[in-house]
Image (cartoon, rainbow, N blue to C red):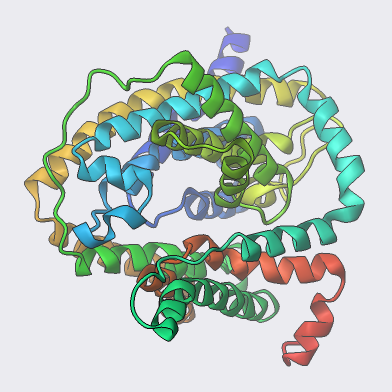
Length: 441
């Protein structure tokens, strides 16, 4: 009986974490790392559960969030007709009344990533150790090439009307806006890393208000300014996927997601961009599914790397937070976590179906702009309660930066300069010197 309780108790916490993250994942701008950080502080202070149970809870939080956070990303972003051809395929699905279909396709991508991780179980320790040995001494210039690739992959948009100067400004305006966003966010990132504004007790949340301002608030502001309204959504009975698309989408998404999980600072969005270019994706179903795979591989893969025997790579917010209070040893934590991932992914997929249907009822029952005003108030409350007035000021400044790519149709991924530029400088060994020139040290 004692052994049964020993195995059942972590499963209980796994289910609790999965259900909690599924609920919180439907709230826009509330990242699961913020909640996990608060739970880790509580656990360190009062040790309210055993270490293995706490890891199960964290596993449920990461897996559930990586799948169910698709719901607000798809259903709470309605562009107007002028912006229809500049938005992601997920929003195009929404404006065609197929948001539910896009949500489920993304969830299938998450299941595909979980299945791929299980298939790679015997090989992951060898692959990760080899990659770490080969690439660790070269991280500085690798991140530099990633930074230059992001800059060089920008391309002119428009530029086919008016006089020569008008054509030039029209075609290159988005590029200039994207590059300005990249470098101004990098400048801000240097300040945040070397002169944190958040209370030391919540130091791990220092970058949170920046990300909320760069990504979440501009999204809400755009929705409030948009003339678009969400059309009636259709509950599809089929996703029209076949095994070829599932296999290709899983392969491309795993390539991008694991690249992002292994290399520091590279996010799922950047990894997805590289994988999309490398595999020449054209089908929108393939793109939507591969993004679900990439997101799962990025969040869950980064957490899994911490448990791989002989590697113990600390990547991703969750691994960084728990590394100060927990360290896995041997093969057992690795295989146990893989089992947690499989169980949590299955539960999360059914939660995705449920919450997608509930979200459709919600957006049909309430005025879309009222929903966005409530969302904005919720965001302000979360930032204020966690990071205080200074965090709110950082968020407002970052909102101004985050609106630049929105207003000038450049890539929002350029906002990742807030982390990519300062950490690349640090990897190259020139970060402290630049910080000294800026008067930060």
